[in-house]
Length: 411
Image 1 (cartoon, one colour):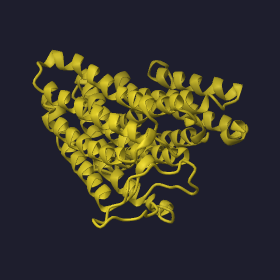
Image 2 (cartoon, one colour):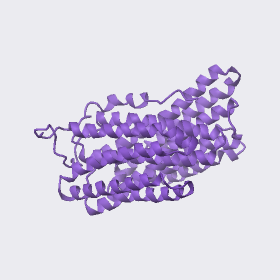
Image 3 (cartoon, rainbow, N blue to C red):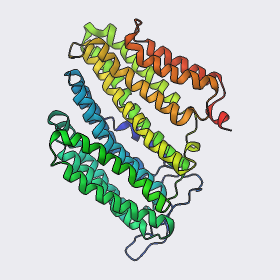
Image 4 (cartoon, rainbow, N blue to C red):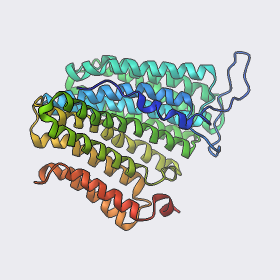
């Protein structure tokens, strides 16, 4: 059903960041290497570099494959297996992306070795992506783990270079390098565990991965550029929304091929586009950089985005599931199929509200947004047309537009 990864999603955004994309070039050694020093967190006009945008492209492939395989599992009736496999794989994708993103905001010196190590991480993503189909179909996570470990060990080399900076940042970098390396040994050992034990130990290893930054930042401190880091999160959100737009386009394409379903598929395409546009509006309504003013808030913002990103990626699978249901290629019932769309939308809205909107929203906004998320989630159980979710989202946007915007309320 899918027409392939939407790599154009990010490419179309690259021109907006080209003017100030690349890092300033510090002094070079005789090997044409630059010292890896902490970047200035107050640097003006800091924007995503062309390398960061290139890095994101390989994640388009991984996210697209994860979403496609989730869709196939859902329509075949393997709901629990599909969701659990998707959440596990998405953790690997999200965590590798997030670690590089925060490292780059702190230590991007943009010399040739930094670029090569980034390319190694990108190669690891492609290996991980190749392992997604067998992970879903057979529970075989070997290629996924190999790709993940390649990415993480390349990140260890980056942290080791950064550790030579000395000071608080150097101390934190050493802890990052040691912690990440130790956890990768455990991931390899995880492959040899029996199936039931893998599920439990997976959660333990996830907790270990999440703990490394907490410990590292307590031992030292790495700087971050708030506007740069939130721009990176926004760009990745746009990539994931592009997958949903692809689902909308596929509904129209399928309608042209399946003329008898034209009356159902075209409205679905309109619904999918409307929902995605409203989610974009909600996500970017309030400025994000103010939410990572200290370490505690940064961890909440960074970790909380797992649910936002995973929901955005799963939405495209839900739209594809609706197409399969309409054309008679799904084992799911009507209510279950509706939940494949409404659940990701509700999680996305709730996550954005908790992380970004709630601290700056008015009393009305903070009432309307979570209530709307609940209504969207319950939509399949309410005897109204499925377009109700789109109507609710449009009303939320109307409330946001009618009042002062998020930037004004933050002031």
